[in-house]
Length: 114
View 1 (cartoon, helix red, strand yellow):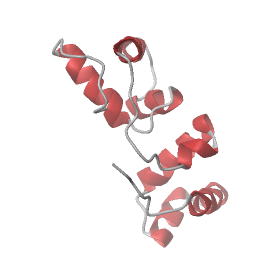
View 2 (cartoon, one colour):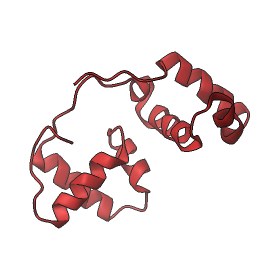
View 3 (cartoon, helix red, strand yellow):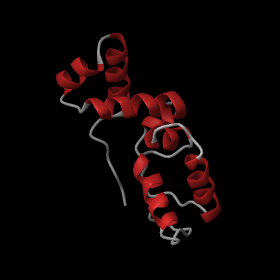
């Protein structure tokens, strides 16, 4: 499944630069972007570099071992769900949240869905 971001990498960088030198809230209002979206872009850029801001063209596949490792590491972490996910190379907290739910239901397995 192909995805196209509303904003290019260059636009995201410009918005981030402006937000860092001004205010996330003000810049969010100016561009009609949710403030939390700009914060997510900031974290993606900080921990994943320019690649973190690029749109991915298709779903990535993760092994069961990797998923279990991240779920168990998150359980021992003080990071927020989003920050932990981004620090560990995921694009969003929803992937990790889904894995946690499946883990708690004893249904976690390797698949391409998340």
